[in-house]
Length: 406
Image (cartoon, rainbow, N blue to C red; front, side, top):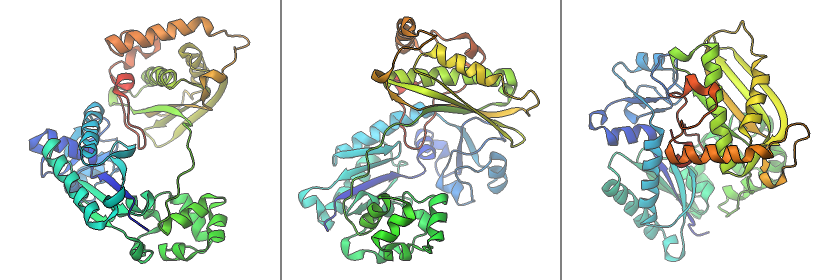
């Protein structure tokens, strides 16, 4: 099978952007944090920090112990989004970007003579050179080239940082045998456990399993897709649909109170409602979570008439918040998630709470905030949190600064 996919994965992305922007951070161990506080966790670490054992999810107090002198930097999501678009443009100038998977991952389709090994490698070299010249030399990437996107992504993870690995049909499946099951896209802790229950505990055994065996292990057609992808076949992923819209925030020390946490939740929900309207979706449920400083977690869930109306969603939040225990420890992090999403055209009128009259209100608030800034108009419950809960970047979502910026 020919080489069809070229996958670009940027290394230690957030930390690399900071090192590119701030010369004094280059060559130094750097950790990027949601807020500057010892009780939070690192959301990114430079390769210099990773050598000391600091990685995504490491508590800041542990990072300081593992790597004395580590540079702690508060995340700047808007800068990462801006750099992302410059990187996409740089890659696009070398080869068409077929799909952007996240803020630091994208794939390109190889066509015609580009599928020859030497031509594909020349494109990879050109991408790296163009990025260094037009965006910055600190923005290194690992590139994987393979017969399909699944294998190209796998190859991009096999040599970091700044690597380039080609997996050809003749290399399969032996070139994968040195990997762990969790090194393969789509295999997390739960899937790994299921595979082990089916006597598949190595990549070699996974590659040797039959199509029916993998269908049984996966519990459906996805097992057959994995069987084909491991053999280099170009199998398209099943179409996906947005299932949730949400925001979370680690609270800085001065906002770790019941009242302030509620205000942050108001702000997060108002941002989520605006995104929901921008996507032309409605939500039929709201989930709220609070993680406390003692490690406990409180969660609650409520259904509602499908809506994108901020007032109606804030009423649902108020009902949930009344159940938050008064005896709970200080809140450390909060989150809201809108669920049971559907297209706005499927909305029917509410029986007891007409929201049609608020469509113009929501539209006016969104329009003014887009034009003059996100705090121009807001519902009063968010007052204490106006300078908190900035834009965040999730794994598979590149924020639209126009809607989600601060």
